[in-house]
Length: 317
Image 1 (cartoon, rainbow, N blue to C red):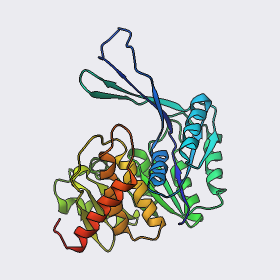
Image 2: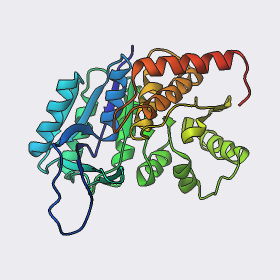
Image 3: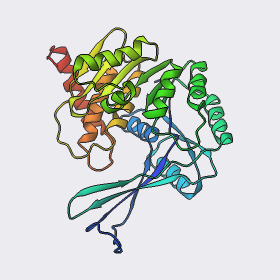
Image 4: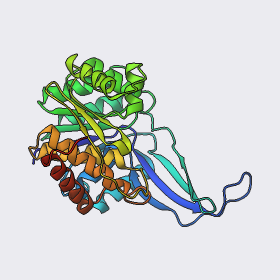
């Protein structure tokens, strides 16, 4: 398998707890907290590990929360390389109200990176002994230089590696303006925001996605469509992949599982079409797990086999 590195610019130490009922002003007695690694690229690396592969998680880390995050990854067997920073790694909180079974997710801003720390991060990426695929996933922290993403992608291109991006807003726009991305994975709302179009039907969706490819922004677009599966668009094809019907327990981690599975298959030599189907299988598998748990390999492989059989039988979308 070729080398996979994930980059998370806003990692997080995720803590989860529950309370009987959410109400203002009162002291809310919580259950024992549970801690887990968080952040887009980190979860992509964890999903790849769940599926039997390996990826190096590269991320800035600071303070006791950053040390705790790295320790959690080490306990899971996830290879990681941290860049020490002055600011503490953020901590995010998930709270379940037992009375309603509703979940409240409190997401703090990512730790600010100084100009020197940003430069060190780019240097660390350039110094990696192996780099075939770089997955950039998640949001940007405050203070990131306007040219950071173009410089990042230029570093990857000079290494002869492929860039895969799962982000939105300024990150996505800056990356597409630079061009040369291998794959982007927006959801439908992110693609609408990017294009400024409502995208009400399949033809329009295909047109917007292929337009990015034809403009040289990226080689492929994989639009995640939730329970409706995904759309893969390249210069040669546009393929709708229908998601298998599964019992939904939680959508948390589905997107990261999809990206991890796609990247793993590509690194193993699969084509984009096969990799996209494996990604949809992993995203569906993640939906079958509770809380923030990612995809399970057995579920992913079973759903992928179903999708492959469906494709071989020529089933209509």
